[in-house]
Amino acid sequence: MELDGRKFRRAEPDERRDLLIAAALKCLAEEGHAGISVRRIAKEANVSVGLVSHHFGSIDVLIADTYQKLSLDLTCALQIEVDKAESAAQRLDAFLVGSFSPLVLDPELLSVWVVFWSLIRHSPHVSHAHEQGYGAYRELLERLLRELAAEEGFVISDPALAAIGLSAILDGLWLEWCLNPTTFSAESGLYICRRWVVGLRRGAFSPDDDA
View 1 (cartoon, rainbow, N blue to C red):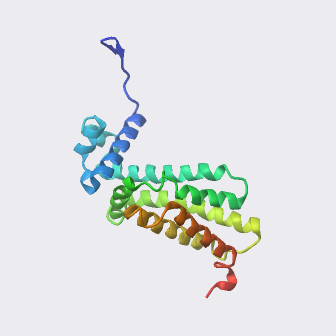
View 2 (view 1 turned 120 degrees about the horizontal axis):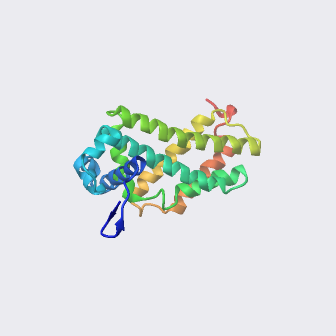
View 3 (view 1 turned 90 degrees about the vertical axis):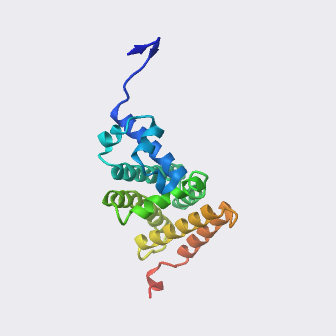
């Protein structure tokens, strides 16, 4: 198609979906819960309101897909950093370093995550997206802990539980930093997590330490 000497092409369905997801993410970042609006998101994407229903069926599905894309993109970014390292210890440390990088420590995303978390109990679609996204993140972390224990010859009695524990520390530090970045530095957060790993090596999750 050509108009006034310029060539145009119709966007593919996947491109339209990605465009709407990016628009939804921007609206949530700027307006929080108020950004959950078909009209607001369509306007941001510069498309008709009908395209939201056409590609997602409902605003609920669009928000859930936005949640899943954001969480999986962050996990993939951490995986890329992990894959650059060689030893198990280096891979786990790369995960921790990545967790305190600007990509993750982004206060602009605080309102986005707050919206997602608030919807988990009320939206089956968002709940499913959470299980998918957090599941992939937790599986990566658990695998890194298992590999560390195998490489260094110590035992973690429950690697899944250990992964949940470290994930909770990371989440708590992320939230505290986003609420007030002056509370501690990224380097301090990384130090805290590295000390947790030292405790892991010393048997914090060993069978002998179980109550």
